[in-house]
Amino acid sequence: MSQYGDVRNLIIQLVDEAVSHQLIDQEDRVYAANRLLDRLQLDFDPMAIQSSGTDSPVRSIPQLLQELADDAVNRGILDDLADLRDILQADLMNIFLDKPSVINHHFHRLFVHSPEQATDWFYQISQSSNYIQTAQIAKNIVYRAPTQYGSLDITINLSKPEKNPRDIAAARQVRSSGYPACQLCVENEGYAGRIGYAARANHRMIRLTLTGEPWYFQYSPYSYYPEHCIILAEQHRDMVVNRLTFDRLLEFITLFPHYFAGSNADLPIVGGSILTHDHYQGGRYELPMSRARESQVFNLDHYPDVHAVVLHWPMSVIRLRGKRPDQLADAADRILDFWRGYSDEACQILAQTDGVPHNTITPIARRRGQDYELDLVLRNNRQSDEHPLGIFHPHEDVHHIKKENIGLIEVMGLAVLPARLLTELDRVERFLLGETVTVAEYHQVWADSLRADHPTVGSVAEARQLVRQGVARIFERVLADAGVYKKDEAGIAGMNRLIDQIRKR
Image (cartoon, rainbow, N blue to C red; front, side, top):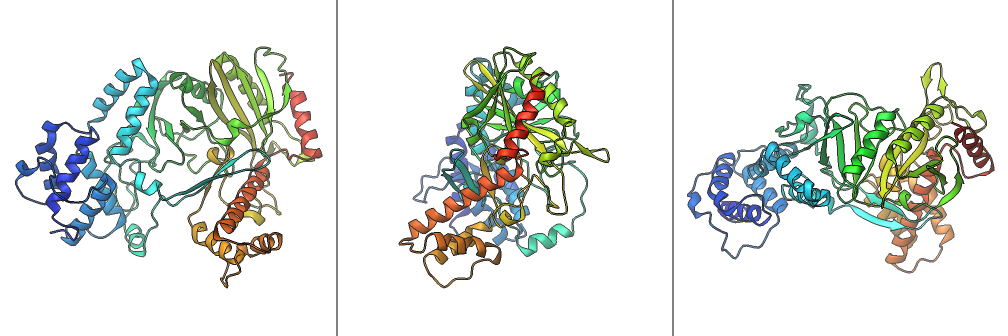
C-alpha cells in the first residue's frame, strides 16, 4: 500500500492520463499497465485497468509520477536519491511514448500541412510525457518590469531541484563513462540516465536538415519561455559562429516562421554554458530585444536591399532586415569578419591579445511577415586586472544579482537569476518594511540605497514592487556592462566609427 492510497489507483490514473493526453489509445491500456507493473515490481490483474472510476483526487502526470516514486522508495525497490527518482519517472513515461521514428513520421506529416501544427503537437507531447518539467517550471518567479529600453523579463529560476547531501555524495562515487559526450548529444535520446547525469528515457528529437547536414530539434526540459527549443548538430563539435551559422538560423526560421532562432557567442565569458556542442536556441516568444526601437539607420553600400539599423538597447546591436535571407547572411558574414579583426582602444576593444581572439557576435534571426531580421550583438571577452571576469561582463557591484555569463537569452532581455534570490529578496522586502531582519551582506549596500530612496514603505505589495523594479534596473546595468559601446558620448562616437567602416564593406 502507498502512503497516498492504493498504488493500484495511482497506476490506473496514470494510464487514464496517458489516454487523455493522447499518448496512447484505449486499446493500449493493458499493455501499458503491464509494463508499469513490471517496472515497479508489482503484480496484480491488469484487466482491472479500465479506468480509475474511484473517488480518488484527480492528479496531474507529474504528481502521479512523484507518488509512484515515493511508493517505490517506501517499498525498498528504489534508493531515495533525486537522480534515481528522475530515472524511474522518465522510464515510466517512456512506456507511453512511440519510438523516435514514429514521432518523426507523424511530425513531418503534420509539417507538410502546417509547421505550426507540427510544433504544437510535438510541444504537447513533450509536456505530456513529462520531458518538459511543467510542474517544476511552474515554481519559477516570472515578471516584467519597465526600463528606459522597454520592459525587461525577469525570472528567478526555481525549476531545477537542488541536490541534497546524499545526492551529492552518491554522484561523487560514480565514475563517468563519457557517454553521452555531453547533455546535448543525439545519444541522449532514450538514455536511461545515471547518478549525476540526467534521465532521458522519455526524450525525443525531430530530425532536420540544415545547410545540407543533419541537425535535430527538441524542447528544453526547463523552458525559460514558451516553446523554448534547442537546435543541435548531429556531430559533437565545438560551437562556432560563421557564415554557416547565419545560413542555418535563417533556414530554420524559413522552415518555422513562427519561431525565432539564435546562437550563443562562440568564445568563453561571452558564450553560453555549453560551448562544446554546436547548437542554437529558439522558441515562440517575443523577447524584449525584438521590441527595441531603432536609434540609427545606415546603408550598406554593397547591399542596397538590406535595411541596417542600430538598436536602442543597452548592448551594442546591429539589426539587418530584408526579404532575401542569402543577402542578410552575406552582409552578416562581412560584418562578422570585419568585427573579428577590429580594435578601438578608446573603448577598450581589442580584437586579440597575443593571438587570442576577443571579438565575436551573438546572432538572432526572426521573421516579420515576409521580411527576415538578423540581429548581430557585438561581443568582446577581454579581461583586465580591474575586471578579471571580463571587461564586458557584469561588473562586481552587480554580482549580488547576476554574476553568470550573459548568454543568448539574457542578451535578448530575459534575466535568468539564481534560486538563492527567492529568500534573499524576501529579506530585502522585509528590510524596507522596517522589520528586523538580516540581509545578505552582498545585498546590504543596495538595500540601504532602496530604503534611503523610499523611507516610508506602506505595504508588502509596495515593498515587493520596489525590489522587483530594483532588480530590473540592475539587470539593465548588467546588460550595459556587457555592451561593448556604452550609451555615453564616447560609446556613441565609437559605434559611429565602426558603422562608418562597416557600411563600406
